[in-house]
Length: 245
Image (cartoon, rainbow, N blue to C red; front, side):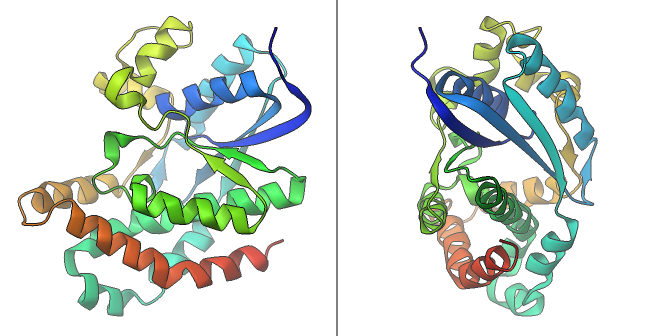
């Protein structure tokens, strides 16, 4: 019998992809109600595909999940355009990664706002080591800062599948659970996108990631740069949270 806290709820940052879907499934074993928060901004395509992932989970565990799609376009622009020219001269090619920084910052900011408005104190996400090299919010030294920001607002944040990519990939686990039609969704581009949206900024970030890999000091130099950018912006991010709760 599951040992559930009968008054407990949690939020999951939910793209609809394999990692967030497995996180949602695991959270449903721990909490009575799970809020799946999907964020969209003008740079994302087909974000409505996350509804397909939600429906699969809802069929498996009816009534367990609440799915919300939240537009973050305005906040994304506020963060990305802030100090743009300064960042361009200061961080150079790393500026290409800052659309991801702005987007993922919005995810966490709006999750904190949602939690405060709905009296929720637990958050989970599907961050994992697959993109640890340069994806801003999946770098361990940045994740520690993010967890600290959540704690300031009385919220516990965790990434339960963070090491799954190294040992037991999420798409393989979802297949075993009957939540995907095949075990290697991440290797099938069309099926991968069938369950989640896609960002138009991703090709540029990927291109520069390949460039950075050839540079001395990778990935430490890139990760330290993103951490520095986070520390420069975190007071501004707090202000956005406080203005909305």
